[in-house]
Amino acid sequence: RHAPCPVGVRESWLHSRSGMMTAPANVTAKDIGLIMSLGYLVYDLATDWGSLCPNPMDTWLLVSYVLISGWRVIVIAISVLSSKATWECLLDLRHDNSKSRMLVSFTWVATPPLVAVWSVMGSIWAWEMLTSTQDCMPNPMHLGFLFVWQVACYAWLVTQVIVGWAAWTLENRMRRVERDIREIEDDDSLRRWGRASE
Image (spheres, rainbow, N blue to C red):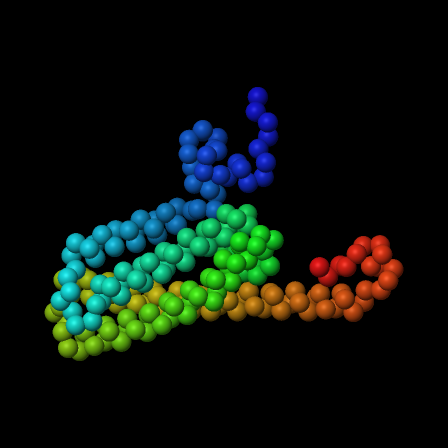
C-alpha cells in the first residue's frame, strides 16, 4: 500500500494509474498535435524549400513556427509551475510562484509584439513575392499554406489582444476591490484578521 500522493504529483510525468510515463494533465492532445505539426513543417522547410525567393520566406516561416511553439511551451511551463489550467494561466497576473509571474510577464511583454512585427514583415515579403517572383515557391500548395499561416498568425494576435484585455480588466477589478477594502479597514479589523487586501 502506497502513501497518498501530494497535490500535483499525481499529474507529473512519472506517475499515472497505469504506471507508465505520461504527460502532465496540463499538456493536452492539442499541444502535442501542435508541436508535432510544427515539427513536420520545419522538416518540410528543410527538405523542400530553397533560397529561390528574393525574400527568405522559408526563414520567415521557420521563425514564426518557433515563436508560436515557443509561446505555447512557455504557457505550458507556467501552467505546470502554477498548477493552473493552460487556458487560465495568462489571465492571472498574480501567480504565487515567482517563476510563473516572471514567465507571464515575459510572455505578455515579448511574445505578442515579436509575433506582430514578424507577421507584418512576412506579409510585406509575401506581397513582394506575389507581385514579382510568384514562381519561386517550391509548389503552389506552399503558396496556399503561406497565406493560411499568415491568417493564423494574425488570428493568434487578435486572440492575444482579447485575452490580454481580459487579464488587464481582471487585474483592474482586483485592484479596485483591494482599494475598497483598504478604505473600510480599521484598527479592530486589522487586529482580528490582519490586512484583508493582501
